[in-house]
Amino acid sequence: MTGVPASAAGGPSPAGATGKVSAVGTTGKANATGASQAGVTRPAGADQGAEGDGRPARGAKIAAAAVNQASIWNIANLLTMLRLVLVPAFVALMLADGGYDPAWRSFAWAAFAIAMITDLFDGHLARAYDLVTDFGKIADPIADKAIMGAALICLSGLGDLPWWVTGVILGRELGITLLRFIVIRYGVIPASRGGKLKTLTQGVAVGMYILALTGWLATLRWWVMAAAVVLTVVTGLDYVRQAIVLRRQGIAERRAALEETEA
Image 1 (cartoon, rainbow, N blue to C red):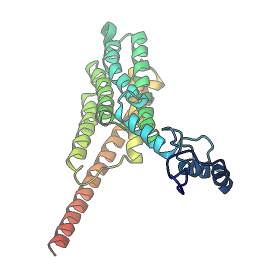
Image 2 (cartoon, helix red, strand yellow):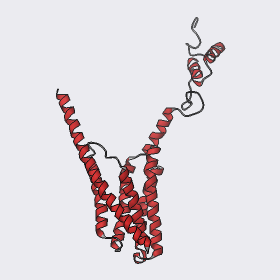
Image 3 (spheres, rainbow, N blue to C red):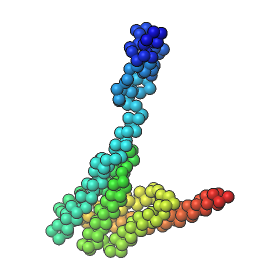
Image 4 (tube, helix red, strand yellow):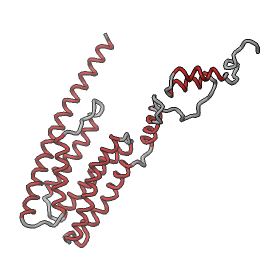
């Protein structure tokens, strides 16, 4: 075809054309432009960073994150599953040989400690590495309540802890969980520092009661549990306050939006 450049006709570019394109710049971006003008198709996944330094493109990172979100078999969910499995194991160890053998109680404490430690890490890992899944949102709070509830009920059943303490802690936990679901249409109540301190204090206090402590350590655990109960009540009332404020704000915003629409 006379007078038509080879690149326009789909044929190979002249040798000089490649040299002109390469002379535009030495970056990977300029080379990629030259390859496009030459009719060369780059294979999928061949794109590099803006400077051609071999780093994965931003699209690849987003795709990898989507894959992680789609799979429940990530490290955060596996830790949550481990905590769920530890619940019946903890109960069996706690009640072994009548529930008063120091050795079995030590094994039960180890299971409880592992559960508490995984509770600290699974949520952090899920948020830090974009591993949040629907399964984790449901299973994580269930696992938290299950291990703490099992420990409190076992301790009260064995006579080591008054039933009213178990009732206050479990009542607060279940009540706040229900409250979160009620006001979720208006927004999410974030976890406060007081709530995190409450969880830590509860874990330490329950762990001390699981162990067969005597002497001044037995007295110390009573005070730690007292602090946990106080924090449980105070933070619970604070969550109720936040829920009321959140609901009022949500209703006010909806009314304002409705009035604006009608206007």
